[in-house]
View 1 (cartoon, rainbow, N blue to C red):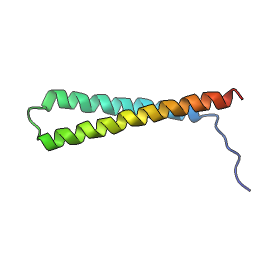
View 2: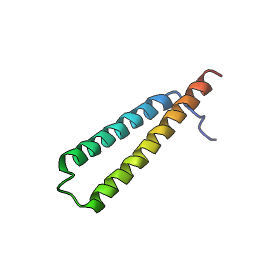
View 3: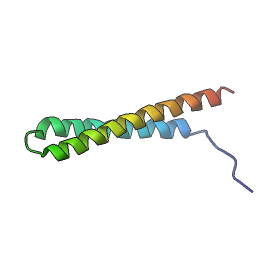
Length: 74
C-alpha cells in the first residue's frame, strides 16, 4: 500500500532550500566582487551562469510555496 502524501512540512523544506540557495548566490556574488580581477573570464562566466540558474530555482521554490499555501487552504 502506498504511503499517504504528507505535505505538512513541505513549506518548511522549501523555505530551507530558498535560504540555502540565496546564501550560495550571495557567496558567489561576493567572490566575484572580491576576485573578479584575478579569475579568468571563463570562470566568471561559469559563476554568473550558475547564479542565473540559482535565481531560477529560487523563483521555482517560491512558486511551490504558493502552491503549498493554496493546497493547505483547501
